[in-house]
Every structure is written in structure tokens, then in C-alpha cells.
Image (cartoon, rainbow, N blue to C red):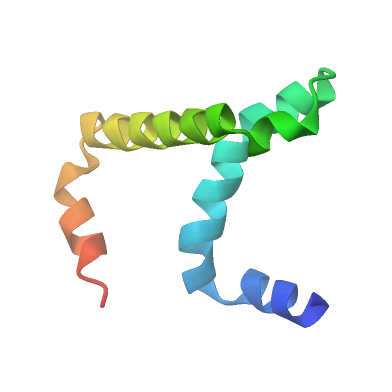
Length: 77
């Protein structure tokens, strides 16, 4: 289990998933420190909130002018 976590840190293609996932968790980590139950993140409402945050982050990237780079990222196959 530890070796798999180590490889996720070393290999950059895992970062494409792990970094956005961590960034989407930040509001829930803040709420946890404020005393809200950790189970909130696992509920349907928590998952919907993460989806809304993801769509909002993508919309922000497009609005900031990164629209021309997104097709290049999708062609990485």
C-alpha cells in the first residue's frame, strides 16, 4: 500500500487526477477543521458540491483564456 502511494507521488500522470481531487477537497477539509462531521464529504450533497466546484473551476480556466490549451491537453493520448 505504501509503495503504491509512493509511485503516485513520483509519476506525473497521476498528478492530473490527484491534484484536482485534492483542490476539490480543500473546502471539506476546512469544514472538518471547523467541526463539521467528516461524513459530510461522503454524502450525495457533498459529491454534488464537488461536481459544482469542478465545473466552476473549469469555467474559470476557460474564462481566464486557457481555452486554447484545453484541446492540446485532451490530445495527450
